[in-house]
Every structure is written in structure tokens, then in C-alpha cells.
Amino acid sequence: MAQPKAPDDEGVPAGLQPLVEQLATLHAADRERIVRAARKVAHEQRRHSVKWSSLRAACGVVRLGGDAVADTQALYDG
Image (cartoon, rainbow, N blue to C red):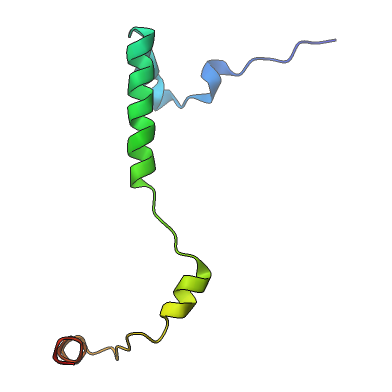
């Protein structure tokens, strides 16, 4: 039976290979710290979604007509 072939460089795109090589030179604890920091930043940059029920409940709260000046005046002047 043939052994499965291991993926080359774990599928890392060629443009990111220098990053992998740079990370490999670091002490394991530093490398883990950097990965955790990158995950934290990625998590903070994620877009937050709104539940459909919340979006539906918000419909009709504000009605704007397409004229930016008139809409602004209506919004601020009541």
C-alpha cells in the first residue's frame, strides 16, 4: 500500500514562505506569542453580524427619502 504524500510546506502560499521562515528562527514561546497576537487582531477585525430578527425589528424606525439635504434636516429638526 502506498503512503499518502505529505503536502509541501503545509499548503503555505509562496508569498508567505518568507514569513514562515522568519517565524521558524524564533524561540517557540515567542512564535506562539506572535501567533496568539495575530489571532487576536484577526478576531477584532472580523465583521459583526446582526440577527435577522433584530434587523427586521429595526425596519421603519427611520425613513429617509433619498434627498440627503432633506433627510438630514428631517433627522435633526424632527
